[in-house]
Every structure is written in structure tokens, then in C-alpha cells.
Length: 208
Length: 419
Image (cartoon, rainbow over all chains, first blue to last red; front, side, top):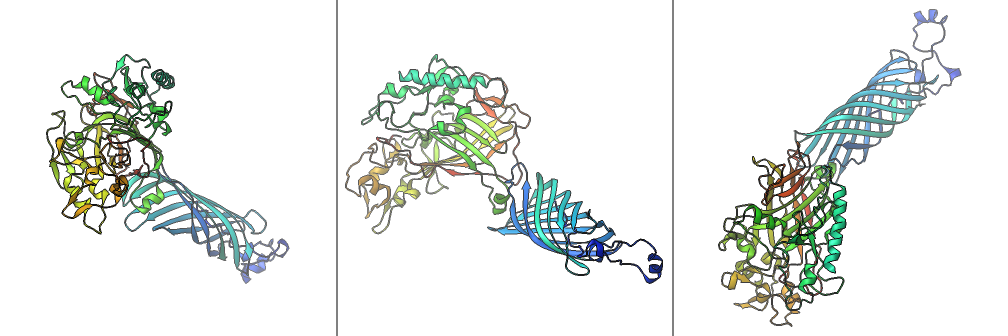
């Protein structure tokens, strides 16, 4: 459940009374000045604008199957994402999450690739809710053997954005990725089905 | 009185079992509670010198089988009611196993008894003292690699009884031995089997200290004993000379000399040969009270006698001989002296693999006493077997059970060979 680090990166420091008007050309602006002011959102976001960001944190990965231990294993996480602003309240994008642990000779990787939507319900972009769907890859290996899996499932998350510049936001977030149905393979041979979960907390930066 | 007490216990346990009847969940079928006679296995032990219990006290530890006959079952090395000593032990009290409630009291010699019915020309009756119980609850199975063990986990309860006589010449030639084996795992693998398992080639054994050497020891009993998988690794004179009788400054290696390992490959197969269940445990004895010596009567040498040997400047030094003889202080101990530690009370059990191929069921099968010809209906001399409706073949992933019991010592006051 890679709840894509849901856009928590774009968040304006402005207050509702200080919403700047951005993203209008001079030619249009003369006409636009007669139009209602457009709330550009935090960090100066405008519809159609690109955004991108990264994050770091800590997460817990779990593999479930009929003979799996099913424990939550902690490890470091990283995140990359980018997309297009649709409106003041909505961003769409692609998010990539990675989780890693190396313990007692076993190296584990848990990665997600998801198409995400980030929704900002407030008048300014503080609280961020995200949801999406994507692919999860899992691998656990030692010097001789490797368990791998590919699965698909939803991601959800929540975060809160703080502006740290005119186009930069900082956001703590929590995300959950669930992949309820995946295959499990041992050294390339099918072993059966499994399910995968990733829960992560972290902080991210986003540029708009 | 004691016999009545055990019959009451059997009755109570039987009623619990009957309460579970009607469901095909593999719950123990403890069968009838009233006895209509004794099996061949009852009465096969008589007290020896130093044994303070009577035969009647001993034979009160019986339970009734599905054929309404009484069978010996587990008892402690000393009778708790009188404090008398039987001089032998049967391993771990099965009542502590999480499977005991389903399985009930273990029937010593049941498979042997059914063989008399199934094949009257192939009688195989084993002594009493060789029945050994071992069990372990919640055993974590091994998967071989670090990654496998980090991701997967299967836990099993295992309860087993193996007839492993390590005091006589029997196993030199005879490869048919009774095994009772119950396992129940968290992944659904489960079965309960009672059978005579053929271990290796009849008439021979494999030298303990050199697994490539097969020692032809004589004709087997019964003479038409079938060939079996696995092997019986038993010490012989050459192992004793090489590893027990050592030069000055060296120390005897009792393990290399005497460690006995019965490595089983057992299966339950249907009439058409399909393998419903298979298991390959190893049953090990650290210090048996005999080894193969063709120069001795009955081909039976005694490790305790080797403690007093001198062979070209080599002799037993340290280890079990020192422990038994008080560093040489005690002279001329006989093999059945309770002070000799060559008595078979220290054992271990390698669980190894357990396979089930019974996805279509049923769970209850009836096989012949050698685990063959399994079918859904009973027949004369058949043994009821429980095999879970499960297929546990996981391709390259083969969980295997660890070694259990090596830290346990089943010796007790008065326990001695033959044991």
C-alpha cells in the first residue's frame, strides 16, 4: 500500500487571506484581472503545472501466505514522485516507493510503482489525502536463494504540508500499500500465492 | 487394582474419543474400552536381577486397542504407586504431547499383532524394552537457507514411538521394526501412522563408523522380510577398536565408536502404489549397550567390556568408560549393571521431512501392517491410518524438522541394559 507519499510536499505558507494570484500571462492577465482571483494553492501551484519530489523515512514490510511468518519487518524507505497539478485541490502523478532491509545475511527489497491522486480538501493545501493503484515487487534473498513476487493493489495515505519556500513544501506523511494477491516464486519456480503490505512514515520535499 | 485403574483411564479417554466420533477430522479412534484378551506384546518382560517391580505390576500398564486386545503402553521407569523399579524406560511420557488428546495411549506392538493376522507366515514380535517414545510440541521446521527461514515458518507437533532395541543382536539382521508416528503442522500437514517399517536391507546393517561398509550379519527374522529404504547404522568391532581403544595421551571418541542411527524411509501407499504419506526420521542412540562382534556369542559385544581391554598399548580412556567405571575404580561391571552408562537412555530424533499427497481424501485409510495396500475400508490385519486431506508438495521448498531430544536423559533409578 504505497500510499504514495501523497503530495505532502506542496503546501503554501500563505494564509487564506494572502492567496497570491499566479500563473497568468500579461495578455491574459488584463482580462483575468476582471475575473475572480484564482487560488493557486500552496507553493504557488497552478493547474497544469508540473511537480516533483522525494522523501525518506522508515517502514514496515510484511509478506503473508499459508506458510509465511507474517511479521512486520522494519527498514529504511525512500520515495520519488512527480506529476501534474489538476486543480487547487487535486494533483495526479506517479509515485515510486522503495523499502530495504539487510539482516543476518538476508536482504529484502519491497518496491511499489503507483498511479496516484492527491486530494487537498481544505481551502489551502495543508491536509493531503492520497489514493492510487499500482504494482508491488518483493524480493528476499541470501547468497544462494531468492524469493520474489509481483502483485497489484491499492495505496492510501495522509499527510500535512508546510511551505518552506515559494515553490517548495515539506510534508510528514503516513502511507499504506496493500497488495492482496500476488504470486510467490523461489529461484524462479512458482510457490503459490501471497499478499504484501508496506506501511511507511516519512518526510518529503516537493517542488512545484 | 492397578490394571483396573488403567482400564478406567482407558475407558475415560475412550469416551472422549467416542464423543469425537462421527467426524472425519482424524480425531483419535480409541476403539473399544473393554478387553477380550491379551496381545502377544503383554507379558514379554520379566524382572531381572535388581529389578524390584513384579511382572504383574509391570503388566498393569496396558491399554485396549481397536481389536479389543490389551497392549503395553508407556510407563515410567519406576512405579509411582510402589516406588519399585522396572529397570528400563520408554522415553518421554506421551501425556505431555499436544497430540496425546487426539492419539490416546500408545499401543506397543499393535502393528506386530496385526501382522500375525495379515500374514500368519511372517510373524515379527519384538521385545518390550525397545519401545521408545519421543515427542516435541511446536517444533519450528527448517527451510535450509537464510532467506527461506526469514520469510517462512511452519510449526509442528510430533509424537512418535519407535521400537529401537539397542541391547541385543536383533537389529543386526532384522530390519522390520514398529513405528508409531503422529505429526500435526501449522500448514495443514498432518498424519498419524502405525506400521512396521523396513529399515534398510534384511540380514545386514551399515557400519556406524564407515557408512560405505555393509556388514552381512546373518539371516533375518522373519526370513521374508522386505527390503526397505534407509539404513541401520550400527557400531561393530572395527569402530570400537578404532575410536574407543586409543593410545596414551588420546581420548576415546565414544560418539564415533558407538553412535547408532536408524535412518528410516517410511511410506503409506495405496493399492495402486500412490504414496499418501512419507516420512524419513532418524532415531539415534548415543551409548548403546552392544555392538556387532562376530567373535562373540550371538555376535554381541559389550562396550562395558571394552572398558577393561588392553590392545597393544591401546585402551579406553576417558568418556563413558571413565564415567561407568569410576575412572577405573569399579572392576568387572557387567553389561546390565545400572552403573554402566552404556544403557541406551540417551537418544535423539531427527524429524526430517514429512510429505502428504492426499488432496482428494479420505482422511482415514486402512493399510496392511507394512503401510501398503491402503484403502478406504478395513480388511483383516489392516491398521487404521489418519492422513490429512492435503497436498504439501511445495516444489523446491522442502521444510525439514530439526533434531530433538539430544539434551534429554531418560535414565532413572535402577535403569540398566537391556533397555
